[in-house]
Length: 588
Image 1 (spheres, helix red, strand yellow):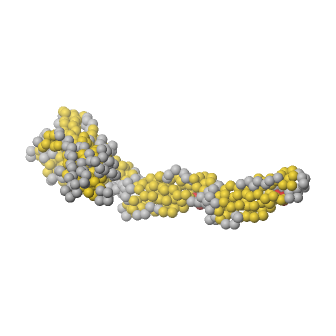
Image 2 (cartoon, rainbow, N blue to C red):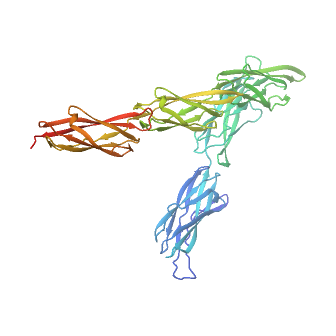
Image 3 (cartoon, rainbow, N blue to C red):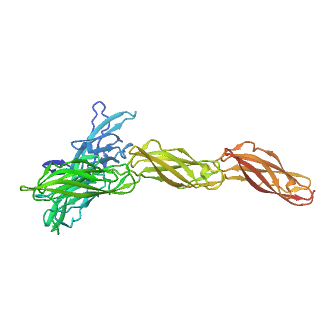
């Protein structure tokens, strides 16, 4: 066997056991001897699953049957064993494979012992013997990966403040839970975290942004570290941290620097009626302390609100604090407001009133949803075809289905048989079933109009979306075979059968016949089995009698059968025809 050492603990990675059963009551009972190979998974990302095969070899002289297998040890909960190919008798000398699945929950070497049990069945189908062998399973959980890219803050006047975005991207194959973030530096930092847009579940490949403010208090280069920490969804014990360097340069201002700096906030696009919050950072850029007297908003649209604050009554030189600002748009448009801070700067024994302001901005995004229809079906006239229309709420607020209607030339052929019910959560989908029952062949295309509602600020808002539904209607397929008459002497009669067959998925009803053409009088329908509705694939027969008269020659006509498509209002009648002919010979 081979042993791996990790953190002072020896872990067996290769152990093959062979066990034999010796019956005491019946010396003729064969021994059950088998082996199970060890399994090494290698590196597996925390939160994902990998499956490997543990090969079972039957060393007995009789067939053996899988009974059970179970992992044990500290990491046993991260391994699952299924029968795999060991679902039938394993012949002497043959092999099968148990399916072992490894789902690590922490980034570490994870080992377990696999106990496998097989039995022998006697001639009466009873379990006559059994034995268990052990082998090892080992794998290493590895942490998922993500990246953080933060641009340089560039050069900025001392006392001014700017905001830039650091982009975090989930580069792993698992979802990350809400990401925490913080900014650190030696001494007083000119960098501050303004908003954490990564406090959400981040799907594989998705990205989010962290807003950072830069407010230099001195000229020269400035640096800090942005630290982020994420956990794997479903495996909260494993955390991944990443440090990203922040940099910028303070430059001398052409005018005197203000005593306080307030970071601007741009909330981006937010669905009307939804709310999002960010931190407005207030920094004391003076050499003395600042005592705050008031904070206020100049907000003509009434969409911003001040919330909790970390600001004490007096902020020391170089210190900072933050005020929570919430943006709740009321209409689909761009809005701006001004955040004003008033205070008193005290340097030595001198007190000076100070004030500073910053801009708040955001865009109200209209409530919206999407409607997706499948490809066009082909439907037989008289039958019905279903289309499942998927409705997805792409807004940040719940939506409720209000109505669905059709417009277009074929709208009378369409109806909604089942619609979305209840509130549709953000990102959720529901199904709307549209049924088309065409009454004529050709294109049956319509526009589906869907209206959803959302309640915003006590008012019901209607949201409208459209999708094109298409269908192709075809006539039912009915065939009428050509009756074949033998040559008939003038003055005699002859009979032949024309078979009427329905080849479609709708019922048709035979409703009559006619013989048309120059020699129509020579043919009559003497018998018919077409007295009931023809189910799909069914047939009936028309027996025709031809009367030969006159001189030798060919008598020709056309047999026309009329059929009604059942269930259509008004009734739709189809016609199917077959050419008939009779060769008349001279009387003998």
